[in-house]
Length: 289
Ligand code: C2E
Ligand code: MG
Ligand code: MG
Ligand code: MG
Image (cartoon, rainbow, N blue to C red):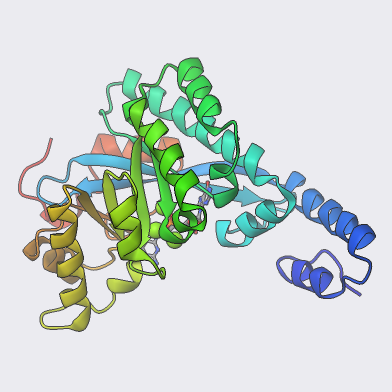
């Protein structure tokens, strides 16, 4: 029988559903327990200006550890949390923690960059979202312009009219909007056409093949040019090699994020990285401060 055993148990239980009402409740209990036994924390990964190496943003990424110290990746955790509805309180915790942390960094004078938080579709559908975010900003004292929301095109397009109006309200108070994993969904161009955006993040699946005359370089260059035509800041994610970095610079990408510069780090590790400039890898950047 299914035992709580990492990611497999979830699928075993969903397959086994017979009585929709009772088993549904049982499933939710199991999933809720899987999450409530977990310790949640955030890791942070810098996004750097491609020319100067200056930090232009920091992405907050959810981390989860169970009682035995095993970690659960967000790719495993988020679908469970969406299934049970816990994504709304978890997401709220992520926004609050990220805002608190960025306020601390601003007060320390570490820089004036937005903190980027990933959003799930359930959060966008939550009626109280705008109010929640406004409250968190007021309570933490973080300016709205220092918060960025990352959404994917598949999320955005699910309920387009609702998404547009929510993103517009967020932007009116100054929150930045970023389109994540760009190029992997079914509706990339529609998302660009309809959504109010500040930044485009090119999905990391395009990075592997980045070299002269490859199809990936052709696609990435076209995405960058399109982003610039639409006045968007374009970030490449998942940059792992110097070759990829140099290729991105040659085709005018604005910013980079990836293991080449820094893995996602704890807040204090990131502070050390900023103090020592360790993410300014191998003198790749022309100028920095
Ligand atoms: P994402 O938003 O596209 O985040 C980037 C993912 O790429 C992160 O994985 C990051 O650790 C990883 N990454 C960064 N640089 C590199 C690189 O150079 N090479 C490779 N191979 N990977 C790199 P992570 O942290 O496992 O997160 C996976 C996804 O889970 C995220 O993708 C995001 O969609 C979701 N996620 C993470 N945190 C949250 C959260 O707080 N809320 C929600 N709703 N989703 C989250
Ligand atoms: Mg993201
Ligand atoms: Mg992404
Ligand atoms: Mg992703």
